[in-house]
Length: 390
Image (cartoon, rainbow, N blue to C red; front, top):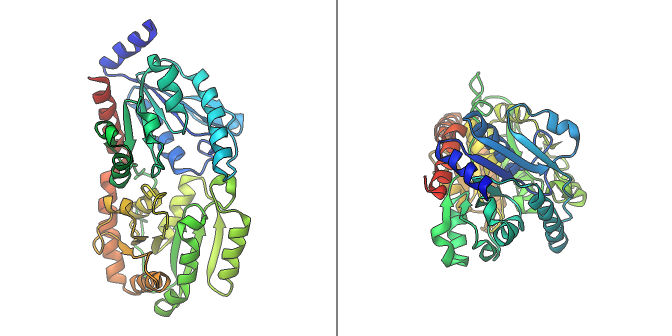
């Protein structure tokens, strides 16, 4: 107990001890592909650069992964698991992983959790270890009541926050809304302005999964070509089930649907610099997610905006936190009977109107600047201070 008091006394002086627990299924960067892992890895480095003591607990696939970090963040590697896509099997794996996590956590000011069971285990048996912040990166599915012992539930969008309160009204006072950040040093407009009078590239970057609407995007490309005959579609992201994708059968179905169309399947890219180059070489970005209760933020769309791209997304509530339709992005009705045609027309007409596309991209980059890593990281630190009563 004395260790906890001493840690919190340090926190009162300005420096916090922050433990960040990531999930069992996605490896830490640089080899991982998950948005949550990428974001919290960047947060950890930023917090550390500001003088805070940061411990990052997560899945590491090899010892080499650990040695690549030189930011001052203490990394605690765990074995983790491969996801199966079967809910109860994966929940059991998450529970076993949470037991391992419980053994590794040191007394801290703040413990940020990103697993299903960890906040519950800590609330029941380890409240003395620190204040618990549950990072809610997906739409809740009725489980939020399990976290009533936590100190805060941090939702990454207004839509997620509303759903938490709808499902568990008693938790309203614990809900905080803080977005994901964008690394503007990595994701920024190209040095040479885009031109729309030659070959044109529509980019998708994200998990290759049915809920992401990738098949809808492929099907829309017949319509795109009517307006922009030189357009090409690049699909970047993991398809393997253990990486959060839809699996080989789904990928093969997409390739069959794309037969005869100018569509390239690039595969996953984990290196941020290489992914940023994809954004810079593109002319339009599309993120047609269909996950009504799964899409919580849409970081890939915000990264594309930071790169100065006109962005076309589906009509999900989470995108409204940063996209103003017609000003810094475009939204199509994915629920409409002819959504394929509507998406194709919107993409094609955007590519065909250079002035409109460039203006959208400029406004998008300006909006993305509000989500700079340093700015958003400070907002998280401010939240931690409020939770600690500083």
